[in-house]
Image (cartoon, rainbow, N blue to C red):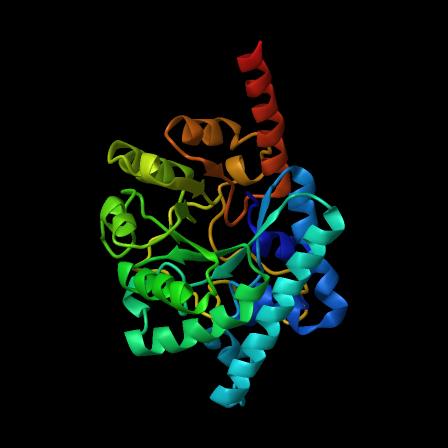
Length: 323
């Protein structure tokens, strides 16, 4: 699988300022046709690194995110803008795949609708259903898989998955939970319970530390979930995130503003020994595979060089097995 498309966009110069980064995040280059090439390039780099699945750049296509960037828009106008940007993101992913001529699946990202990692800020069901249905109807025609990702609560995961099943036109539905250091979902639900509560075609764990993701995977493996369905793991390169104190939301920043800067600042602490080391995930991914994972990739701060290093290492493992 691929890695942190949003992080790669940040490093590629896709944002005009730090303020734009904190208000629109990865959606920023979608708003400007002259910057669409950044999105295609990010997908292409992961494909060239060996990813056989890429995730659409639709994570920031939410009403909550867009309302901070376009405060004077009505709800109807925001919804139209959301649909426009989400469709653009899907077409840019398709452009990257078509140009590569590789056999690559497009996973359409269906994100949490409020702040990442914050189950306490999940909206009421009616609001979730209405917003998810509109997003899913927009992106599903271009998707090989609908990926409900970075779900921090069972409540939101259920609504997202059910909406994907109802409005997704029969496209396969996967769900990925973000986990804390215990290996369980951030709302306190045990990971095995959270996965078994959903009608999904594959289960994933994402945007947790490599260690937390391994704990979650082992729990799923022991419970037999890895035998019942495909399971994937996509860790990030961050220090552990404390959801109870994570306050970043669209329009806010834990870093100081600098309107003159076109390079976004770091918002969450990076583990440089992982993020800056292309080989850091080779043994991690190998251990995931040994514990039942059928798919491996990365989330925030996992770059094409990490994916490439594992692909090369995996080819070496397979050659040894044959020998």
